[in-house]
Image 1 (spheres, rainbow, N blue to C red):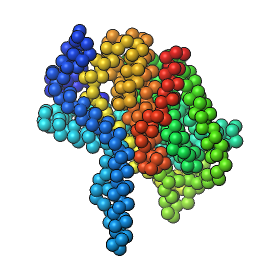
Image 2: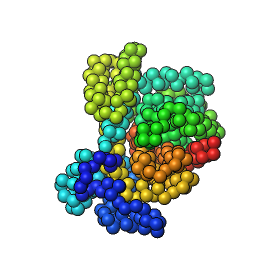
Image 3: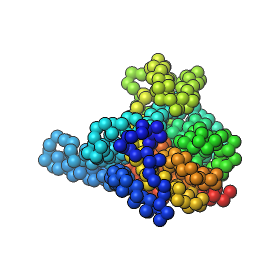
Image 4: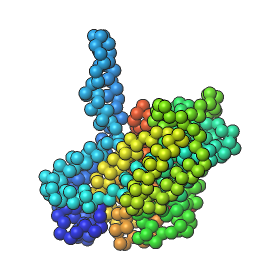
Length: 484
């Protein structure tokens, strides 16, 4: 995000306060004026839109890569040649990895910045104008939440709830999608997403549900986590951005958002459960999933290391590390330092641990870092767009903007609009969290969920499938926040 403390006189980026007041001729004239003052705005936004288009084409790149691989393997078998990887297929695989999209287009943006403003201005923006705290935090909290003792503890707790429904796949599904997202208000949304996705993989997706139910579950998970973090003022990134400037505390969040979010989550889960009840009955007749300990990508334990049941004190220490990370969430040196201590602890307690796979958290962090680099240059059009809307259009406008940008950026820019009334403030935050499940880029924890569950979607989640799966719970959340 753009730093509000950019030194005066910086050629790039131009602070929002440096633009003239909104044009009386309307929003389009205001945007035209800003583009005239800073022509690079159009270039930065065009690159950002191309990056978004790339995310929608990622699944297609994966399909093409598989076709090329199959053709090459068939040709090599026919000619009795040893298998050789296809460079074209590998390149398409790379382009199909959603986690690298925004970082890849950030390189294009960097070249454009260097061409327009030179090395000094470009490095000033990337080094001083962008806040990377959120991507760093997601990397650390995702790695901690995915550790074996934490997942086993969460699974044990949810098993007691699922036992009320005899631990059928449907009971596990309801438990994870209701309890997990609500826990996000206390252990942060990225941690809730990581734990919920890992448990869904083990207790539900491993049973191979239908494609419709897979996408319905993923959309429901993303929406529920986005709104489930609103019971408190410190767990959801879009709420964190406004809590201090607008003086929103725990009481405010519970009375204005929390109970409505809880109702929306329960209603959405109930409706989807009823819609797929026949399939849940079919899944219940499948053989039970063997409870084995694997890392989140399904890798076996490290050879030569006996994995023992983690004693309670190990799980408690893991929770303390998570607590420290949450408490120091705004101070990267503190939570990164704590994570380094944790890696030492994990090494010392190796018999109780699964191998810590840092690849998924690092890829998610890379995704989010690229997103905030691009998103920080979109304030020139988002801020006047929000300022031009009344309460109800502001809600829907924030929800639509969120689908194409991180919802934390949308709410942050809303704090820069001085004319927002209390109902308008409520509307922009409610819209931002409601739209947090429509796309992978809409909410910071979504890439974490996709990284864990993408293997159940042939390696790539279809943006259209996710959108369709999220429409119903998004509608339920809209009714809850706007009419309750």
